Length: 89
Image (cartoon, rainbow, N blue to C red; front, side):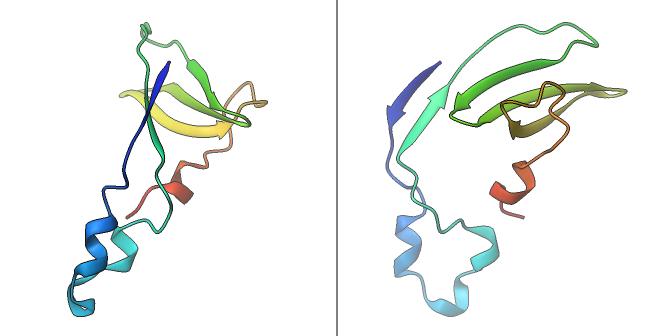
């Protein structure tokens, strides 16, 4: 996994007229880096990669392919998906 410093892509939204800003669609968090990784996974196989202390990226096999989840890295089965809390609607 490689991580690079990044600027927050949402900072330009601060200059938008308030009536045009849809707060629920743009995160109000600081984005300091972007990380990339690659790998291979086979049908029916789960993939898990810890990307920061306490959080892991998970591919969980299902009928249609995989479900993406962000879970606690100590959870072997990735049963808790924290991704819904960090993904804008």
